[in-house]
Structures are given as structure tokens and as C-alpha cells.
Image (cartoon, rainbow, N blue to C red; front, top):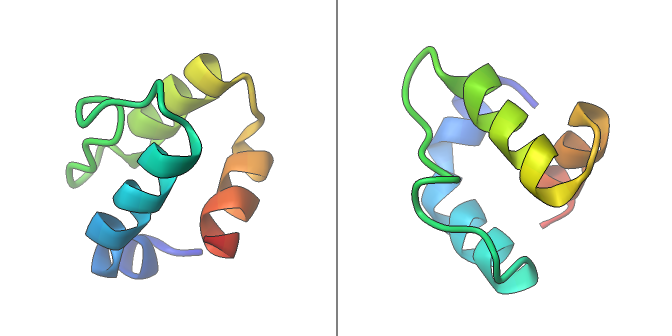
Length: 61
């Protein structure tokens, strides 16, 4: 998944992630240009998942 794909439908993906993981907040899912790695790092810590697991999880939503 590249940045354009992620950015294009991020609002929809955010909603699905928040439904699946109730502990996630809007701040956790803030997707700012150039901050993708920082966001994924926060999600890795909060959810205890690897970067690859997160990418797979998001692509399956």
C-alpha cells in the first residue's frame, strides 16, 4: 500500500480501525503528510503489532 492509496480512503479506514480497536483515538490515526512512519510507530506501540501486520490489517479493511 502506498501513501496515495492510504491517503485516498483514510477517513473510511480510520472509522473501521476505530470500530475494530476501541482504544484508538483520532490523534492516534492522524495522517499528516510526511508523518506516515510516525503514525505507524504509534499504532505499533498501542496495538502491539508489527508494521507488516498493520499494513495487512489496513489493506483487509
